[in-house]
Length: 272
Image (tube, rainbow, N blue to C red):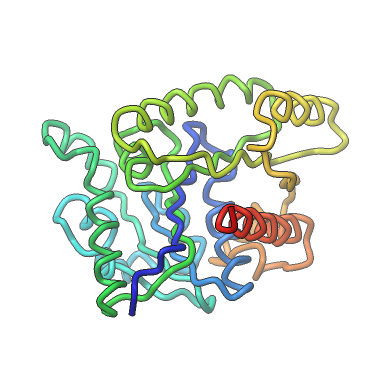
Protein backbone atom coordinates (compact mmCIF):
# COMPACT_ATOMS: atom_id res chain seq x y z
CA UNK A 1 0.00 0.00 0.00
CA UNK A 2 1.56 3.35 -0.95
CA UNK A 3 1.84 6.10 1.60
CA UNK A 4 -1.22 8.33 1.69
CA UNK A 5 0.20 11.67 0.65
CA UNK A 6 -3.04 13.40 1.59
CA UNK A 7 -2.90 12.32 5.23
CA UNK A 8 -3.21 15.31 7.54
CA UNK A 9 -1.83 15.29 11.09
CA UNK A 10 -3.62 17.93 13.16
CA UNK A 11 -2.81 18.97 16.73
CA UNK A 12 -5.88 20.23 18.60
CA UNK A 13 -4.40 22.62 21.12
CA UNK A 14 -5.18 25.38 23.58
CA UNK A 15 -3.54 25.92 26.95
CA UNK A 16 -6.92 26.52 28.61
CA UNK A 17 -9.06 23.67 29.84
CA UNK A 18 -12.73 23.35 29.07
CA UNK A 19 -12.63 24.99 25.64
CA UNK A 20 -13.70 21.91 23.65
CA UNK A 21 -10.46 20.23 22.57
CA UNK A 22 -11.55 16.68 23.36
CA UNK A 23 -15.15 17.35 22.32
CA UNK A 24 -13.82 18.56 18.98
CA UNK A 25 -11.42 15.63 18.54
CA UNK A 26 -14.01 12.92 19.09
CA UNK A 27 -16.99 14.56 17.36
CA UNK A 28 -15.09 15.91 14.37
CA UNK A 29 -13.39 12.53 14.03
CA UNK A 30 -16.77 10.80 14.20
CA UNK A 31 -18.31 13.15 11.63
CA UNK A 32 -15.43 12.67 9.19
CA UNK A 33 -15.53 8.91 9.75
CA UNK A 34 -19.24 8.94 8.92
CA UNK A 35 -18.32 10.69 5.67
CA UNK A 36 -16.06 7.76 4.80
CA UNK A 37 -12.75 9.27 5.90
CA UNK A 38 -10.56 6.96 8.00
CA UNK A 39 -9.53 8.87 11.12
CA UNK A 40 -7.16 8.27 14.03
CA UNK A 41 -7.22 10.14 17.35
CA UNK A 42 -4.01 10.17 19.38
CA UNK A 43 -4.86 10.94 23.00
CA UNK A 44 -1.88 12.90 24.28
CA UNK A 45 -3.66 14.24 27.38
CA UNK A 46 -2.83 12.41 30.65
CA UNK A 47 -6.48 12.78 31.69
CA UNK A 48 -7.36 10.40 28.86
CA UNK A 49 -10.75 11.98 28.24
CA UNK A 50 -10.78 11.23 24.53
CA UNK A 51 -10.14 7.56 25.28
CA UNK A 52 -12.91 7.43 27.88
CA UNK A 53 -15.31 9.37 25.67
CA UNK A 54 -14.90 6.72 22.97
CA UNK A 55 -15.64 3.89 25.39
CA UNK A 56 -12.07 2.61 25.76
CA UNK A 57 -11.85 1.05 29.23
CA UNK A 58 -8.64 1.72 31.15
CA UNK A 59 -8.04 -2.00 31.61
CA UNK A 60 -7.81 -2.46 27.84
CA UNK A 61 -5.16 0.25 27.30
CA UNK A 62 -2.18 -2.07 26.96
CA UNK A 63 -0.04 0.08 24.66
CA UNK A 64 -0.55 3.82 25.01
CA UNK A 65 0.81 7.23 24.13
CA UNK A 66 3.12 6.88 27.12
CA UNK A 67 4.80 3.84 25.51
CA UNK A 68 5.17 5.72 22.24
CA UNK A 69 6.95 8.64 23.89
CA UNK A 70 8.96 6.79 26.53
CA UNK A 71 9.77 3.41 25.01
CA UNK A 72 9.83 4.26 21.30
CA UNK A 73 6.77 2.07 20.86
CA UNK A 74 5.21 1.87 17.42
CA UNK A 75 1.97 3.81 17.00
CA UNK A 76 0.58 0.93 14.96
CA UNK A 77 0.82 -1.34 18.00
CA UNK A 78 -1.15 1.09 20.18
CA UNK A 79 -4.11 1.66 17.85
CA UNK A 80 -7.49 0.47 19.10
CA UNK A 81 -10.57 0.25 16.90
CA UNK A 82 -13.59 2.04 18.37
CA UNK A 83 -17.22 1.08 17.93
CA UNK A 84 -17.42 3.72 15.20
CA UNK A 85 -16.42 2.47 11.75
CA UNK A 86 -13.37 4.29 10.32
CA UNK A 87 -12.47 5.80 13.70
CA UNK A 88 -9.50 4.46 15.68
CA UNK A 89 -7.67 5.76 18.75
CA UNK A 90 -4.29 5.57 20.47
CA UNK A 91 -5.28 5.74 24.17
CA UNK A 92 -3.70 7.67 27.00
CA UNK A 93 -2.94 6.81 30.63
CA UNK A 94 -2.29 8.98 33.69
CA UNK A 95 1.41 8.00 33.64
CA UNK A 96 1.73 10.33 30.66
CA UNK A 97 1.78 13.21 33.15
CA UNK A 98 5.28 12.13 34.22
CA UNK A 99 6.75 12.24 30.71
CA UNK A 100 7.92 15.85 30.91
CA UNK A 101 9.96 15.19 34.05
CA UNK A 102 11.29 11.87 32.77
CA UNK A 103 12.65 13.17 29.47
CA UNK A 104 13.43 16.76 30.46
CA UNK A 105 17.18 16.38 29.92
CA UNK A 106 16.98 14.33 26.72
CA UNK A 107 18.11 15.91 23.45
CA UNK A 108 15.17 14.41 21.56
CA UNK A 109 12.50 15.46 24.06
CA UNK A 110 10.68 17.65 21.53
CA UNK A 111 10.73 15.22 18.61
CA UNK A 112 9.59 11.90 20.04
CA UNK A 113 6.07 12.09 18.63
CA UNK A 114 7.46 13.26 15.30
CA UNK A 115 9.63 10.13 15.16
CA UNK A 116 6.62 8.00 16.03
CA UNK A 117 4.59 9.54 13.18
CA UNK A 118 7.42 8.92 10.73
CA UNK A 119 7.42 5.26 11.79
CA UNK A 120 3.65 5.08 11.29
CA UNK A 121 4.01 6.50 7.78
CA UNK A 122 6.59 3.81 6.97
CA UNK A 123 4.22 1.13 8.24
CA UNK A 124 1.45 2.57 6.08
CA UNK A 125 3.77 2.55 3.07
CA UNK A 126 4.72 -1.10 3.51
CA UNK A 127 1.13 -2.16 4.14
CA UNK A 128 1.57 -3.17 7.80
CA UNK A 129 -0.68 -0.38 9.14
CA UNK A 130 -3.95 1.26 8.12
CA UNK A 131 -3.81 4.46 6.14
CA UNK A 132 -5.61 7.48 7.59
CA UNK A 133 -6.97 10.64 6.03
CA UNK A 134 -6.95 12.60 9.28
CA UNK A 135 -4.94 12.10 12.47
CA UNK A 136 -6.02 14.29 15.38
CA UNK A 137 -3.81 14.76 18.44
CA UNK A 138 -5.87 15.73 21.48
CA UNK A 139 -3.47 17.86 23.54
CA UNK A 140 -3.53 18.57 27.28
CA UNK A 141 -4.77 21.92 28.64
CA UNK A 142 -1.28 23.43 28.85
CA UNK A 143 1.58 24.56 26.65
CA UNK A 144 3.68 21.69 27.96
CA UNK A 145 6.25 19.39 26.40
CA UNK A 146 3.39 17.11 25.35
CA UNK A 147 1.73 19.90 23.39
CA UNK A 148 5.03 20.90 21.82
CA UNK A 149 5.63 17.27 20.80
CA UNK A 150 2.25 17.25 19.09
CA UNK A 151 2.97 20.50 17.24
CA UNK A 152 6.39 19.31 16.09
CA UNK A 153 4.80 16.13 14.71
CA UNK A 154 1.77 17.85 13.13
CA UNK A 155 1.08 19.39 9.76
CA UNK A 156 -1.22 21.96 11.32
CA UNK A 157 -2.85 23.18 14.52
CA UNK A 158 -6.58 23.48 15.15
CA UNK A 159 -7.33 25.91 17.99
CA UNK A 160 -10.71 25.67 19.78
CA UNK A 161 -11.55 29.03 21.31
CA UNK A 162 -14.46 29.53 23.70
CA UNK A 163 -16.69 32.54 23.13
CA UNK A 164 -15.97 34.02 26.54
CA UNK A 165 -14.16 36.94 28.16
CA UNK A 166 -10.36 37.03 27.64
CA UNK A 167 -10.57 34.53 24.77
CA UNK A 168 -8.27 36.61 22.60
CA UNK A 169 -5.69 36.78 25.37
CA UNK A 170 -5.60 32.98 25.48
CA UNK A 171 -5.33 32.83 21.72
CA UNK A 172 -2.30 35.11 21.85
CA UNK A 173 -0.50 32.65 24.14
CA UNK A 174 -1.14 29.60 21.96
CA UNK A 175 -0.03 31.60 18.91
CA UNK A 176 3.25 32.44 20.64
CA UNK A 177 3.92 28.73 21.16
CA UNK A 178 2.89 28.01 17.57
CA UNK A 179 5.32 30.65 16.26
CA UNK A 180 8.15 29.28 18.42
CA UNK A 181 7.62 25.72 17.18
CA UNK A 182 7.30 26.89 13.57
CA UNK A 183 10.45 29.01 13.76
CA UNK A 184 12.66 26.49 15.54
CA UNK A 185 11.34 22.95 15.10
CA UNK A 186 8.67 22.55 12.42
CA UNK A 187 8.83 25.22 9.70
CA UNK A 188 6.04 23.53 7.72
CA UNK A 189 3.54 23.86 10.58
CA UNK A 190 0.36 25.68 9.56
CA UNK A 191 -2.80 26.91 11.26
CA UNK A 192 -5.59 24.50 10.35
CA UNK A 193 -8.14 26.91 11.75
CA UNK A 194 -9.57 28.68 14.78
CA UNK A 195 -12.80 27.07 15.96
CA UNK A 196 -15.21 29.15 18.02
CA UNK A 197 -16.88 27.01 20.70
CA UNK A 198 -19.47 27.35 23.48
CA UNK A 199 -21.32 30.06 21.59
CA UNK A 200 -24.48 31.39 23.22
CA UNK A 201 -26.54 33.45 20.81
CA UNK A 202 -28.46 35.02 23.71
CA UNK A 203 -25.24 36.48 25.08
CA UNK A 204 -23.94 39.73 23.62
CA UNK A 205 -20.44 38.86 24.84
CA UNK A 206 -20.41 35.72 22.70
CA UNK A 207 -21.34 37.76 19.66
CA UNK A 208 -18.62 40.31 20.44
CA UNK A 209 -15.98 37.58 20.79
CA UNK A 210 -16.97 36.14 17.41
CA UNK A 211 -16.68 39.56 15.78
CA UNK A 212 -13.33 40.30 17.43
CA UNK A 213 -11.77 36.95 16.52
CA UNK A 214 -12.93 37.17 12.91
CA UNK A 215 -11.57 40.73 12.67
CA UNK A 216 -8.15 39.65 13.94
CA UNK A 217 -7.77 36.28 12.20
CA UNK A 218 -9.98 36.53 9.12
CA UNK A 219 -10.24 33.39 7.00
CA UNK A 220 -8.34 31.33 9.57
CA UNK A 221 -11.56 31.25 11.62
CA UNK A 222 -14.01 28.53 10.66
CA UNK A 223 -17.42 29.69 9.54
CA UNK A 224 -18.92 26.93 11.68
CA UNK A 225 -19.49 27.92 15.30
CA UNK A 226 -20.05 25.27 17.97
CA UNK A 227 -22.91 26.21 20.31
CA UNK A 228 -23.03 25.72 24.04
CA UNK A 229 -25.01 22.48 24.22
CA UNK A 230 -25.78 20.19 27.15
CA UNK A 231 -25.70 17.04 25.00
CA UNK A 232 -22.05 17.70 24.15
CA UNK A 233 -21.31 17.65 27.88
CA UNK A 234 -23.46 14.61 28.66
CA UNK A 235 -22.23 12.30 25.93
CA UNK A 236 -18.73 11.46 27.34
CA UNK A 237 -20.25 10.00 30.52
CA UNK A 238 -21.91 7.43 28.26
CA UNK A 239 -18.65 6.61 26.48
CA UNK A 240 -19.93 8.03 23.21
CA UNK A 241 -19.43 11.10 21.03
CA UNK A 242 -22.44 13.40 20.96
CA UNK A 243 -22.95 12.44 17.33
CA UNK A 244 -23.79 8.91 18.49
CA UNK A 245 -25.45 9.86 21.78
CA UNK A 246 -27.81 12.39 20.18
CA UNK A 247 -27.15 12.98 16.48
CA UNK A 248 -29.94 15.53 16.17
CA UNK A 249 -28.81 17.90 18.93
CA UNK A 250 -27.46 21.32 17.98
CA UNK A 251 -23.90 20.37 18.98
CA UNK A 252 -23.87 17.26 16.80
CA UNK A 253 -25.26 19.14 13.84
CA UNK A 254 -22.56 21.80 14.26
CA UNK A 255 -19.79 19.18 14.16
CA UNK A 256 -21.28 17.65 11.02
CA UNK A 257 -21.18 21.13 9.49
CA UNK A 258 -17.58 21.58 10.65
CA UNK A 259 -16.58 18.26 9.04
CA UNK A 260 -18.07 19.41 5.76
CA UNK A 261 -16.22 22.71 5.99
CA UNK A 262 -12.93 20.93 6.72
CA UNK A 263 -13.39 18.62 3.74
CA UNK A 264 -14.11 21.58 1.46
CA UNK A 265 -11.01 23.41 2.74
CA UNK A 266 -8.87 20.33 2.17
CA UNK A 267 -10.08 19.93 -1.40
CA UNK A 268 -9.38 23.62 -2.06
CA UNK A 269 -5.81 23.32 -0.73
CA UNK A 270 -5.12 20.14 -2.69
CA UNK A 271 -6.44 21.69 -5.90
CA UNK A 272 -4.29 24.80 -5.50
